[in-house]
Image (cartoon, rainbow, N blue to C red):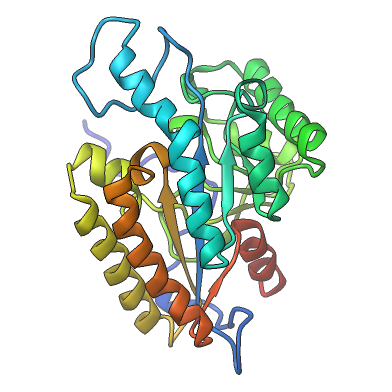
Amino acid sequence: MSDFGPLRHHQRFDYSPITRRAHYRWPGAGEGAGLAVYIGFNLEHFAFGEGLGACIGPVSPQPDVLNYSWREYGNRVGAWRCLDLFDSLALPTGAIVNSALYDHCPELIAAFAARGDELIAHGHSNAQRQGEFDETTERALLAHCRERIGRESGALPTGWLSPWISESPVTPDLLAETGYRYTLNWCHDDQPHAMRTRGGQELWSVPYPQEVNDIPMIVARQMDGRDFADLIIDNFDEMLLQSREQPLVMGIALHPYIVGQPYRLRHLRRALMHVAKARDEGLAWIATPGDICAHAARHA
């Protein structure tokens, strides 16, 4: 006989409708802003001739020079163009970094650290899928990334995003046990909230977008750069309206090998100018994921 009972559940948090949550405001002008916005800027490194990697062209047998070099354009050119844009609009970022970049192009991470951006751990390389590791190897990965970023850049990271957003059944437990405060892996909500872990340590989930994200939209769905910029603006305007009633978080997930291409960068500039204008008017708070997490935790 079939079992029609409750389905298997992760047990990390309970169901909670967003219409029945505590009301608070984000830091901002006057009574504060209802919408917090962060830029999750992914700085990634991929092995040559092996492993995983986003592909914008036809996949070839390894070494896949076309797709490897397209991704490397982001580190050599695209990220620097985006950095100029962020500087021009005084926008902070959450720089989501592979630790292998310290061996490949350390000056790139240093440029983001120098402007006071939050460095968020993102595995060693995006050529690897974390969820395939055994528990010992996964724990070692989390500890290595935290130690390497702390040693090289002067501050231990508190946030994590898994390469390919790939988790094992114990990833949240291991994150809490190795010193991380929040994860960006889950995209199920528009507010941060605490997750359960096996040891009882606190681990927060900060929303990370899969819609306002250039990889799913531009690579997978083949959306044009102009349309992606319109998506950012439309999503921002609608969430700004919704945030009159409750605090909300909007992430903007970007990869420099995609939005750093000149014709896409032009449209991204238009979208981010729209967001920055609302910030200047005191309507939205532009922050880092870590700052967003800390503020939400104080109101939990």
